[in-house]
Length: 135
Figure (tube, rainbow, N blue to C red):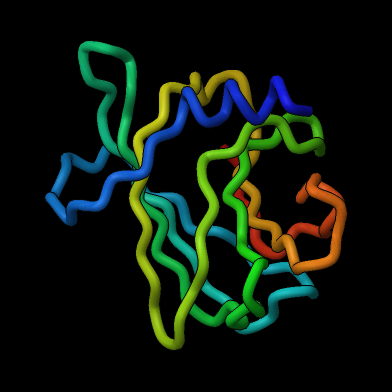
């Protein structure tokens, strides 16, 4: 698991700026029974010369989590968590997060958001999916 975390950190970088980028695809996520009333959209940018692309997640309706907990945006393959795109927290209203990633989307078949509440083992994959979308 530690190796997966190291690879994930190397492949994903948080971007603080709100610069516009060319959107090549917009992916609305579907809610599960665990996140009724939530809404999320992923905007994907074009790949740059280095093979990285920007992604922006806009989410609303997720509960604010207690200190020490967070949400995770994953790429999944065959119903299993495969790679993290980033972790985030939400505030009231709509929250937007932007990252850069170097993953090949062809290697995955679904986007997934899960939660990692405090007190759980360090592996956030143990929580159920809250929102998801096919790639």
